[in-house]
Amino acid sequence: MNLGRNLKIILVLAAFSMGSQALADGSDYSFPNDRTCTSSESWTFGGSFPAEYQREYREFLKSGKTSVRGFSEAVALRKASTQADQKLFAEYWMAHALLDAGQIHTAYQGFLAILGKAPHKEYIGVHAAAMDCLIQIHYQHPALMIPEETTALFPAYLKVEEAPEGLLSYLKEVAWDGTLNLLETQLSDDRIAPAKVQASLAQLDGSGVYHSLAQGLWMAKQGDHFKTIENLQKFVDDPKIPRNLGRFVDLAHMLLARAHYSAGQYDLASDELKRVKKNSNFLAETLQELSWAYLMNEKYPEAIGTAMNLEAGGIRHTYAPEAPMVMAMAMNELCQYPESVKAIKSFRKNYESSYRWLSNWVNMKNADSSKLYETSVDFIKRKPSDVPERVASEWVRSPLFISSQDEINLYFDERDASPRVSKAAAIEQRKVGQDILKKARELKPRLKVAKMKLKPGETLAANLLKSLADLKDEVVHWRRMQLAAPIWTTVSKRFLAGIPAHQGKLIAGINLDVKNRNLRMLTQLEEIAENIQLIEVEIYNGASEDIIWQNAHPDYKEVAKQFKSEQGLSPDKVWDWGRSLANEGSDENTDTSQGPEIWEDELGSFKANLFDNCSSKDKYLSLRIKRKAS
Image (cartoon, rainbow, N blue to C red; front, side, top):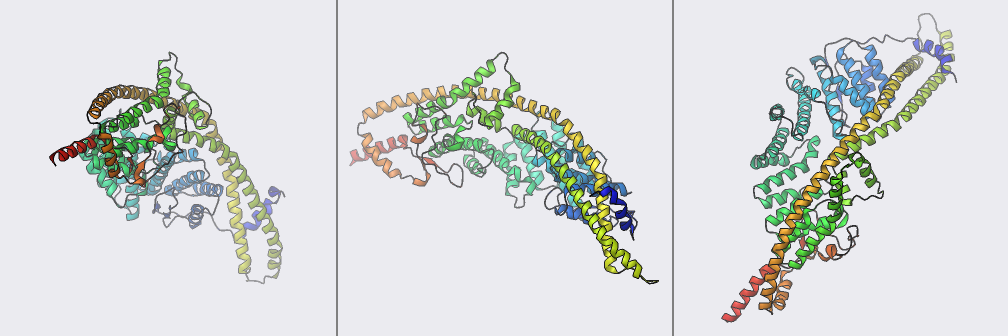
C-alpha cells in the first residue's frame, strides 16, 4: 500500500473542518507536583498550556503512548509554541522520551542542554524538572555525574519567593537533594577546599533531615566523633526519611558505629553495625568492624563468631584479612592457645597467595595496569586466572568499578537497542498510516452520500463530524511522527559515534582504581603480618605458662569438664569452630561451606563454641580454696 500516493486524499479529508493549530499565549507557567523521571511524576500545567499536549503528556507518563510518539509530540510542541516555558517543556519532553526508550546517555545530554539556560521565573518549574531528572539518572547510574557548573544553579531555586506553594516546595526538595549529592562528591575528593564544603552545607540550612545527614558526613570527615553521632543519630531516627535518601542509611550506621568505636562506646558501635542490611555492599566491612567492636568490649565469643562469618559460606572469598587476627586475639584472651594458633595459620594459608601475587605485581618493573580491567571482567565471567579470588573480589566490589561497569554495560545496551527502537518506530509509523488510509477510504463514500443529501442550511450529522475530527487528529499525529523521525535518527547517530571514546575513559579510570587498591591491600597485608608475629609471640608465651600451670594442677582437666557443661551455650547461637579451620592442609579454594551454617536476623548474633580457660582457672583455684577451708 503506497501511503505517499494516497496522502493527498487523506489530507483533503482531514482538512475538512480542521481548526487553527496556533497556541495560546499567556504569562503563567507549569511545574511538577512530585519528583520527575519517577513513577509518581505528575504536573500542574499553566492555563495557556495547550490542552491537547497536556493530554498527550499525561498519556505518555502512563505508558499509554510509545516513546517515539511522545518524542514526536514534543518536537511538534517546540515548533508550534511561542512561549519560553512551553518550548523548554518540549525539550524536557524530548529528553524524557529518550530516557523512556532506554537511551540514557542521550537523555542525560538533553537534560544538561536545558540546564545550560539560566533559570528564569517564567520556566523555573521546567528547569528544575530537568535538574531533577539529572539527579534521578545519577542515582541509577552513579558514573553519570552532575557537572560542577550545573550544580551552581541550586541556589537559584532557593531564592524563588513569589510562586505557588507546591512549586516552592518542589524547588527546595530538588535543590536540597542536588546539594547533598554535590556534597557527597566533594567529601570523596581530598583536593576539594573546605570552604566549598562549607558553602554547600550553608545551602542546606533549614532542610531538616538533609542538613543532619550532610553535617554528619562532614563531621565524620573531620574526625569529630561526638558531632558525627549527634547529627547522624538525628538522621537515622527520623521517621520520614525521603526515599531518595534511603541509599545513605547503611552508610550512616557505619559512620555512627565508627564514631562510637572511636569514643570507646563499643556496645553502641555494635548496635549500629547490626543495623546494616545483609545485602549491603558494606557487609564484609561491617562484619570485620563488628568483630573488632566485640573484641574491644571483651565479648570474645561474639568476636570470634562474627569473624567466622567471614570464614564460611559464600562470603569466605571476600578480602577481610583482619578477621583471623581478631579471632587469634580473642582466643588468646580465652586462653584457647591451640585454637589461636589455628587462626594465625588460617591467615597465612588464606592470604599467602594474595600477598605473593600483590607483591610480585607491585615489584614488576613493567607492571601493566592497562590489563587490570580485563582481568577483573575475566574474574566475573569465571575465566581461569592467576589472580587470587580474595584480591579479584575486592576489585569488583569497588564502588568505582561497579558504577563504571554499569555505565559500560549501559553503552552496550543502548547501542544494541538503538536499531530496535528505530525499527519499532518505523513499524509503528507505517501501521498508523495504514489505519488512517483504511478509515479514509471507508469515510469517503459516507461523506459523499451525506453531502448529496444535505439541504440548504443543514450541516453534516454529528457522528460524521466526529469521524472527520478523529481522522484529522490521527493525520496530525502521523505527520508529527514523520517530521520527528530524522531528528531521532540524527541524535542516535551522534551518540553512537561517541561511544568508543567514553568507554576508553571509563576503563582507564577502573585500571587506576584497581592499581591503587592493589597498593593498599599489599600495605595492609604487610602491617597485619607484622602484628600477627607479635600476637604469635604472646600466644606462645601464654601457652608455655599454661603448660607449666596445668602440670602443677594435674586434676584441672577433669574439673574443667564440669565447667564446660555448666557454660550451656544456646545451640542456635553456637558456631561449630572446627568446620572452618579443621582442614589446615587444604588450599584456600577448598569448599568449607558444607557444615552447619546459621544466620540470625541481626549480624554478629553468634557465639563461638569455645570454653573460657582463663576464667575456668580462677574458678578452679576458688574451688580448691573452698575445699581446703572445709
